[in-house]
Image (cartoon, rainbow, N blue to C red; front, side, top):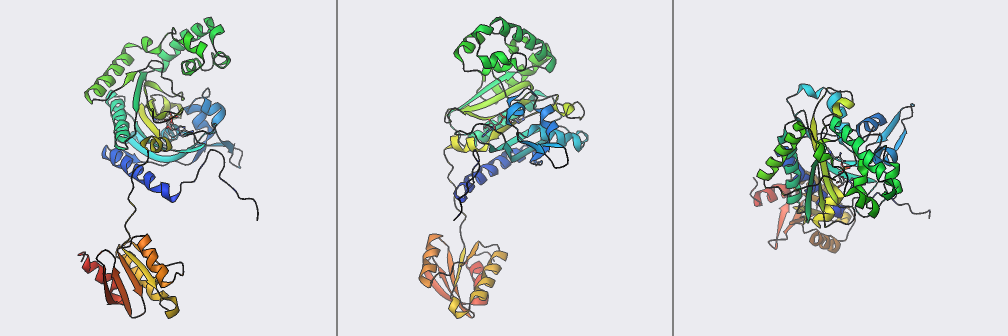
Length: 417
Ligand code: HAM
């Protein structure tokens, strides 16, 4: 026997026993998002590397060390998508969606790839559900987007939730603030971790994210971007907050909230759950008013979020999922040559939209009846060419029915005809 192979580190199989909860999660997301006018979009699993280098930002951890990048075989660099927002903005620009009524509201449920160190709740292939509203800078878009994610997490009964909210202002405001923060960090360089010190030029905002005690102490006195918003950005942030207050959404304004992507402008937010361990981020997002333009489209505002499927399922503690009922189990006696007749009965039952399963394992008569109990089939048909013994397991009755009439008989009995 050769070596038994396993999935690569940081990936996993979605097994049948896990599929029900994921399907229920997807149905809930679909209902909430399509109910609010979001339409499903799916982009390819890989994109030209440029999409992420420009979109997500060259200084981010994602672009610097987490992307699966390879040659497409023709000398062009492609990358397995680490996130969905940049590809969707690429699609918006590529398909001229700015000509549609705005905002264009899109949702997705897809897998993403990041070469991170695997741990509980952190995978190298993971799944996100996300929503993007592109083409409006109205603060109601930000607030609505947050309310939709909050509704989804509530309906999934994700426990111990906390919502943090901040505004990063426009790119220009952030640029001015960045210089001030860099000056502050340089003045406190002795107190900072080596990692943060090395990133003063490239990504000074990440200093707020550090768990190094000296850095944390130094950052307590650091200038805050929220205090540097211009009047328009401050008014936008106030309007978002007012709408959230009115919607009864609890949040904390956290001026140190850092998101790991560079495209954000103005509103940023993140939901964490204390039902999770170190990887407590369940879902997050924000506004990205420059992103479509960075990817070659017209200047277009946008706002959205994504939430991790694995983390939502972990924090929801398992959703009860009912197995689909089996209407009919078609058994037969192979020795009597009734396989073809049984096959036809199962086929006809499915055409009539019954959930029907055919005996496929060569079980004995006794084994077949045991299997019917195991799958809790309502009816068991023991088919022979002419007559079928049809058992109604729930009513505890048994009837002899001409084989050609089995499906019609069940439908009549169930009052479906
Ligand atoms: P993100 O915060 O990088 O944002 O990811 C969103 C969510 O995906 C996280 O809160 C987490 O639940 C999940 N996630 C991220 N990385 C992993 C991983 N390695 N394993 C398991 N789950 C993970 C974005 O991706 C942005 N595109 C969100 C967005 C949409 N912003 C605007 N629109």
